[in-house]
Image: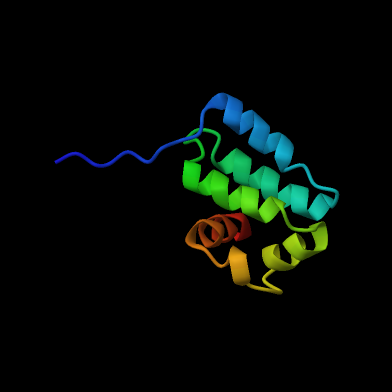
Amino acid sequence: MSEIATPMIDERALSKLRWRCRRGLLENDLFIERFFTRHADTGISVTQADGLTMLMDLADNDLLDLLLCRKEPSGDLDVESVREVLADLRT
């Protein structure tokens, strides 16, 4: 029985995503850099990239509130891809 492979983003998409994830608050950058370091060997799935991109649309302080568990995703952010990435960022 074969497993269905999770689609991963390619190097170009990864480079664009890293650029998109640059933040103004050092605290956010620390969480995000740790995420990229953790996934350096395994890669980042399309689902993870989608969730991370949605989080990057937030203002720095709103993102930090989510990362520090001061808030939980709501509205358009309350989707599985965001929750998955957020849980990973928080660990």
